[in-house]
Amino acid sequence: MYFFEKPLDTILQTKGGKVMLGKVFGVICLISLLFALLNGNAAALGSAVLDGAAKAIEVILSLGGMMCLWCGIMRVLSEAGLIRRLSRLLSPFLRLFFPEASRTGEGLEEISANISANLLGIGNAATPFALRAMEQMQKHNPHPDTASREQITLAVLNTASVTLLPANLLALRRAAGSDRPYAILIPVWITSLLCAAMALLLTSLPRLFEKKITRFPRAHRTGKRGRHG
Amino acid sequence: MGETVAAYAMPAVMALAGGFMLFGKKDYFHAFTEGATEGLQTAIRLLPTLVALMVAISMLNASGAVTLLSRVLAPVAQRIGIPSDLLPLLITRPFSGSASTAAFSSLLDQVGADSFTGLCASVIFGSSDTVVYVISVYCSSVGIRHTRWSFPCAFAVMLFCVFFSCFLCRLCFF
Image (tube, rainbow over all chains, first blue to last red; front, top):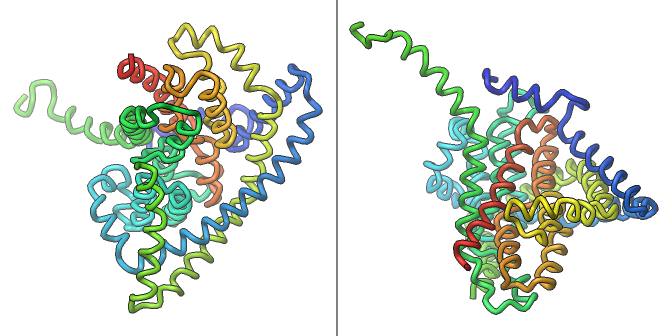
């Protein structure tokens, strides 16, 4: 942990509950109650809770099926050596944004598979690949209950979905009776690429700051008049 | 045309794997079952967090927070140049995939898919994802509780996405 991260972690973790996930859940619960009281439909909340729990089981069933399928397929393709070739193709990118994983060699294949699945628009496969990548990166995580920087980078990168062919979006536009559903294709490419770039930049900031710190001592050592001063 | 290419991507990958199983020398089916077992274990580890998440999102949807917030924030949105019709989509997008899809479709039906608002909404919908779901699921699958700067970064990116989409649509289409 470097100097930049400690204050940031402290700010994000103190103030109320210790864990961020718990805070998100708590905030959503309280806001829902507040708004339900304001809107006068607090009774609907009760059935919403039960519906939510039932829906969770549905989601788990489909997610479980997807996880089984895609992790299995990934294992097959990885043993065939295809994914290694893919990650070699992406290695400049991976080395820049996932240096730890590049160093240890774990998780690179899964990250490459995740990025490729996102690009191809196979969202079903992207999630299982990302989850496997998180697991592989977790092996080298010194604090198992805290996200490592690269795990954060992967997660935030996945929220900025970069897809070459957003099939879902196009289908929705077609269904809404659009005359030119493909009109937004290029803007979506531009926007999602920029969002992904921003995601990578923001999540790599701590690392950039840390590099600057190690550069300063050398600059100061030469003094104001330069090397011969 | 685009959708057919995308639609073929998944079967193509399946066919590739099937091809290896049929013509490959190693026991690829065994690899499949091993990978699938690991995948299933990960999914099971996810269940508690997913229950909490789905219940919270369901409550949020039922409480009418979205409509109330949209009404409250409409003047603010107008002032900063974001069409106020986008607000339901913007509010649900980070939280729930199904609610945001529903909000998106109803928005397109309401204002027309080729209107400025409809185009902005499409770009936003295509360049973002459900922040809370993704980060929570990814982190809790490996037992991470401290997500550090994931949520702030992801919400910052989402904010950027919204502003840039409106700006780009204004540039491209008008």
